[in-house]
Structures are given as C-alpha cells and as structure tokens.
Image 1: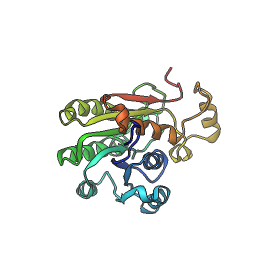
Image 2: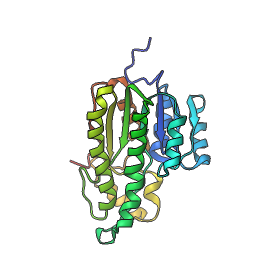
Image 3: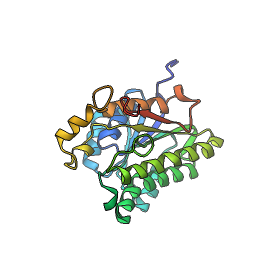
Length: 248
C-alpha cells in the first residue's frame, strides 16, 4: 500500500514538448515518482534521449507536431486512458509591440495557445482523460503577473492559455477532471539561449530575482508532479506561480 500522496505510481501521464527543457524534466520527474509516461514532441531523436533517461517507465514515444490537425488527431487516437497530462510544448520571443504583426501573433498563438487547447479539447471529448485525471498547462508570469517590454506577443498567448485553464477547470469538473496551470518566471532552458538576449543581459536579469537565480526545469517539473498527484486532489482552476519571488 502506497501512503505517499505525492506518488504517481499506477498513473499514466502524457507529457508534450518532452524532447527538452521543462518537458523533458517533467517526463523524468514523473517517471521517478512511478508514473508510466507517454512522451510527445516534434523531434524523434531528442525524444529518444528523453526515453533513455526514463527507460522502463516510458509507455510510448509518439512524435507529433501539435500545430498540425492531423498529428493532433492521430496522437489522441494513439493514447490509452490517461490519469494526467502536462502541456509543456511552447515557444517564446522578445519583440517590441510595434513589430508585433498579425503574423507574429498568429505564429505565437498557434504554438502556445491553439495547439494545447485543441489537444486538451479532444482528449476530454474522446474521454481519454479518465475520471480524477489532472491536466497541467505551462503558462507564464509573463502576461499574468509581470509585464516587461518586448514580452507582449508571448505574454498575450500565455495569458490566453491561463484564462482557458480556468474555464476548462469549471466545465471539466463535472467529470472530476482537474485543470491547473504553472506560471514560471524565467527558466534556464535552450529557449532563452537563442541569441535574442545576450548572456550578459541574462546574467544581469537573474539578479532581479529575490532568490538570486533563474529557475531550472526541475523546479517546474516538481510543481507539475504535485498538481498531477493525489496531494492536490482538491485543487483546480489554480495558477501556481513558481518564479523565485520575482512577482513580489
């Protein structure tokens, strides 16, 4: 008998964006807590690297481009009944609003909003999400708690995702499906090292965090484990801020 409410033993969890960053760390953390993990992402080779880290706990690898309708539908058809899902796939950009064309907004919303929303809608409609399942959306403090110049296009997509989370939590509660989000501050993933911001600027920015550093993917993954576990069984419609104190 397992008396640990944070355990994921016996649960089957889907993790999107599992090829790197927060998604990979979440898949590893879920496996370490005993879950059977299904991983998806765009890059089969990098998904295999994640699979190598979780070994026998990997239930399946299902490569998919979540902005493509056919890929999403095929993914949903391939899924077994799920006890949880963590939507980690996303993109970011630093762009002043004067350069935020409709095309730029469309690109960002396709990845950060429409893709996870459609996947979640289909999983619920097709009853892939079992009773008492938990869905975790990775949003951001950008657009919900912090409004920095150059972050408007990205922040708007994450704010929309966070709003959708609350509506889904209200509607999905009739089947006891919980829906929450995590709003991280800046997390040290490959996304922030693409040259848009210099390494010197990143180091200086990290000093503004009360705890003196950016987050690590594992910091967010541990929050996802909590929201997936029975320890949070009376929690839905909540945005969990994990930001090293930045928002205060």
